[in-house]
Length: 427
Ligand code: GUN
Ligand code: ZN
Figure 1 (cartoon, protein in one colour):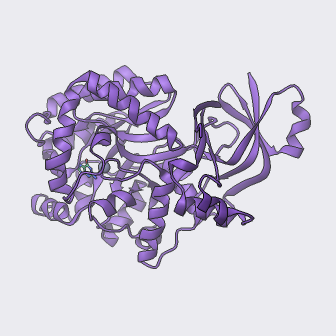
Figure 2 (cartoon, protein in one colour; figure 1 turned 120 degrees about the vertical axis):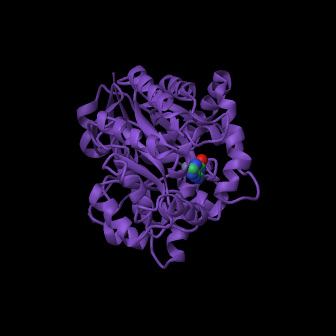
């Protein structure tokens, strides 16, 4: 079944910092989709004649690739906006009690369904997701993702030093991870990530086993947190006395690889940035979370000087919005606080192809190129009276920046998954 979509098309498939011509734009474009895949893309005037038999749907807005959230916790959905603490106290007081409830599969099912619908409502079609320590929390998420045909990467959280009721062991962590890899490998658009919670939540033996598991499975990712909060960093330094810095604590266990995604990286040394670049590992930058928990502001300048690969994450529930537009707006503000600029095309790259590259799915999604899966979002630049006024008659860069700074779920008019409308705003 072939279908075509006509509209204003925009994508950025490589970091415009490195490749100035990475922006692909058709003011009046046509996207041709067969069985969920993009088979052609170009100016409407050039492609339309060859498609006389194909139904053409006109999309009302700026069409960009579906957003890719490079770091988010689905079990924390109901703890978003929890008051008063920085990272370690926030985890103890608000998050660990909430995650304990995911021992109940029915609860996990209910939250997973709401969470994925919320991603779609915000234009996010792919994500790298933390579940909980419970094996069935991954099943709940993957089953719900399969129903919605979304591209989701996740893996049971490893935390043998977690609190009572939220703790595994090296053996149960390994057995649960292997069972999930066996059960879910090759199904739908799903992928697996070995997921040690962070250095402080696992024994050396479990970190070593996570490294071994990663080495045994070349098709899985590694996903964890890195250098987010000063007290956390001090505790890591006190425990891992042999390590030269926080990243090195992971490196010693084989956890720093091209398939590794580290959330945050707020407090990174020059050495760590150099090592991230050399290893090919990436950082999921999570500005709304970093502001909410008072963790600090990501240093784009330092990361860029070393050529560290970057993507963008909401980090719900420390993050305060499911919207990657809103997240990109806060990333701009965090960058400017250090006198760095995050231009709207690079912001779009980070929220789409950049995050997709971290997840090793850049050949499948993120740029709406022929051969890729047809996940895309229709952005309404007149979603609010203020946006309508600010974008009226403006050039593309200015309109895109207005969406980055003022936009959120309200501007997402429609979200398409594999060429099918998966969410449509009704007002
Ligand atoms: N570090 C360890 N666990 C967490 C978590 O759940 N959220 C955030 N933001 N940081 C963490
Ligand atoms: Zn997180």
